[in-house]
Structures are given as C-alpha cells and as structure tokens.
Length: 223
Ligand code: CA
Image (cartoon, rainbow, N blue to C red; front, side, top):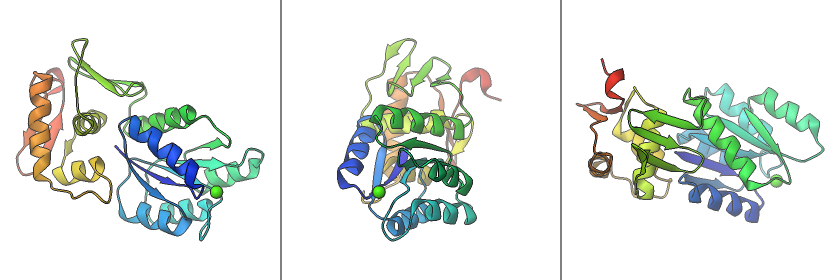
C-alpha cells in the first residue's frame, strides 16, 4: 500500500511519514500543493493525506483538480481546528474524510486504514482469506493463528493482494503500490517475493494468472 503525504510543515510531514512507514506503508512526500497535485495526478496511491493550507496551490484546489481529472483515490484532509468551513469545503471538493489539527498520529493512521479498507470493499479491520488473516490494525498476518514472519516487502505484497482478494493484480500494479517513486523498480523481483510469500503461507492461495498477474483467493471462493 502506497501513501502520499502532502504537508508543508516539514516536521509534521516527517512525523506522519515515519508513522506510516512503521505501519508497513510505502510513502511519498510533497511539501507544496503543486508538487502534491502532480504526484497524485501521475502516480497511483492507495490513499493521500492532504493538508488544506499549502503553498503554491491550496489543498481544496488540489483535491478538486484530481476529482475533475477522474482520480478517485481516498483523500484524508488535514484542517485547522476551528475552521469548520474548511471541512465542509474539503468534503465538497471531493475529500473522503478529515482530521483537525492538532491530532494524534494514531487517529490519522486509523482513518487511513479505514479509507483504504473501504475503498477496497472491506468493512472490518481484519481481512480473511482461508486460513490467512490480515490484521490491518497491527500490520501483521497469521496462518491458522500462527504469526507470519514477513519482511516489509512481503507484508506489503500480502496486504495489497488481500485487500484486492479475488481480482487479478498485475505485476506492474504491484510494483507501483509496493515501492516509492525513487525506488529502482524491477517487476521481476515481484515474482521472487510472491515465491517467498507462498512458501511462508504454506497453503496455495496465490494463483498465477498467465500473462496477467496474480490472484489471491480462498479455495472455497475459487470457481
Ligand atoms: Ca500547512
């Protein structure tokens, strides 16, 4: 899962990015509205955290432009505490949720998790695929109750596949959602990660769909 953080307050931006990375997300950062708008317009994100008060282009304009350009990723706005009008304007412009400053980082994380889950059609914080359970809150996965020891890449891969359970996910899509913009991406490594993940899970839940990508589903759900 890949997140964009657009916040001009350098410390706050770093605080949010660090917390997201610790939770297993890959994070890109922008420090003004123009840069943030460009990234959100050109890169695929699973969620965006967007400050309203930004240099170059304000957050409301950024989200408006994304929406009018057909970008539908979940957007969480950061608003000033007493500016109720900002919250209304943000939601009207196309934001999905907001958090008022000052906030606890945990609240932002919880809202981001919920936005990503709901965008993928899951209402519970735990996603289940046969014997595998993904706890999005604790950023961990278990097989038959036993915790899987996963690297951050393996966790991101599993998390993305489970959020999109039952659908075919291409290698390109996986690469785009597992690495940040500066990473030297190579879609061949995805195959290696899938192989390792299969071994760790021990049950055959990740199907290779020739020429298309991968699909994760529980045996009972398979056609
Ligand atoms: Ca600001």
